[in-house]
Picture 1 (spheres, rainbow, N blue to C red):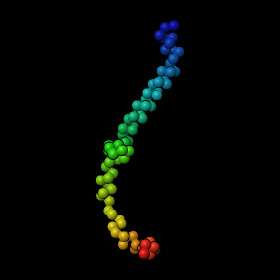
Picture 2 (cartoon, helix red, strand yellow):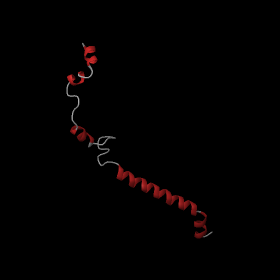
Picture 3 (cartoon, rainbow, N blue to C red):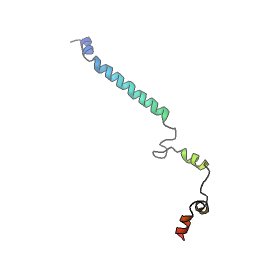
Picture 4 (tube, helix red, strand yellow):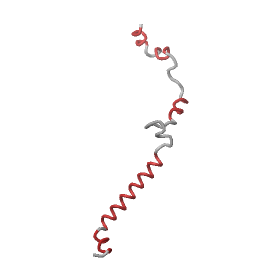
Length: 78
């Protein structure tokens, strides 16, 4: 049994191994492109989102703002 016979008998396994390697390499490449740069800096979160949230306007500045629409809550508190 020579090397050619060995290759001929295991060709399907080599094809499967090559295909699996291409899939794994593709997954690693796509993951590297899709994951944001600051993901994982502070656990499983994107660290840059904190600065983005700080830039948003505050909707509920005081309790009076809430009570304009939800007067029943103010009555329950009294």
